[in-house]
Image 1 (cartoon, rainbow, N blue to C red):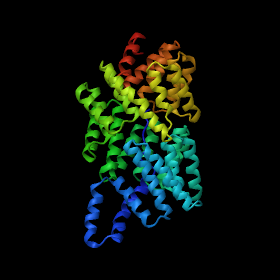
Image 2: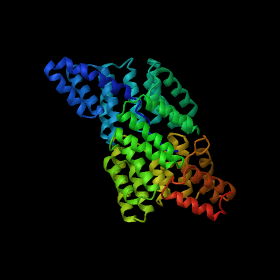
Image 3: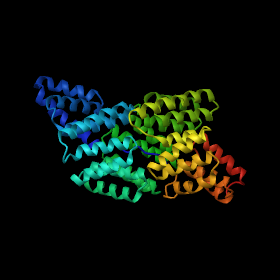
Length: 435
């Protein structure tokens, strides 16, 4: 299952700051300068503008606890957009300042802290913070979004569905529709997932909102082998937000699947130049490896640990990607240790899959199989998870089950991985072909 980065649960606060911008400038500048100030705001991206507005507001009214909370939430979003983990520390400081200014009844700051905890992969803390915020204000739709994300990552899927339904009731909009889409996808309801994203798209006005919706409409198409549909969504999204890294990543995957090596490499390179996230570096390296460019692949892989250390220094824990990377690159001890650490924190389909693949890499397939089965039990199993299960089933001698799993993986998405899809085909053939 692809891990979707939920549209920020703090978008409401960012939007509030943007809406407030015109009024803020009207108060503090003369009429002749007002148009120039508003034009200056328009020339920077909305998120940066929202941060600048909040900072200027706090220079005038440093005791404004609400704006401190909104600034912290905007920093969380800025970290996501820029892949710069230093914004997490800024977010932490602003949110703590809000709580210092108003320690009781401050559901906005608690919600922001919950979003920050989710971003740092401390999902149990995020769930607790969101619950505390909702105890203060049960009508806080943003807090319900934070709780949805936390419960999803903790593997509490019924609880996540309940939370997102409450969010939809309170505030049907981009943040709630996109979460509803992911919830449907996890349960195998791809039509419902697509419908929810299309509803979200209908209410966007271009820019980041449209880019987000197009990214995941494209991902849904790609996950089912619809390369044309995926390409259309990514192209449309890039018209709304040129150079968006997530959209470029989708385009790179389509180009790779079509065999357009030069264009795929150029596009992957643009992605990692803009956002050198560990998972992006690993994916680019895997593609280079699949094309026989081992030295180039190693250059990407060598950056992974450096970038990961930067995130750890800012409080971000991601043992999941560490486990999968180590399992795929011949380090089973590290893979198992990282997978176990992640599994101890949360038991969802992603951590079950990582545990299964790590144990398989260590030759512990009998232990791996129950995890592989859990990873594919929810209803919306990805081709990669099905491939992992098929490999493990073959290793324990369950040949018929392995053939079925491998065939299902390739039927779901024949281009699910530039490295593993060909291996799935080869293993299936060696086991006697399709059942």
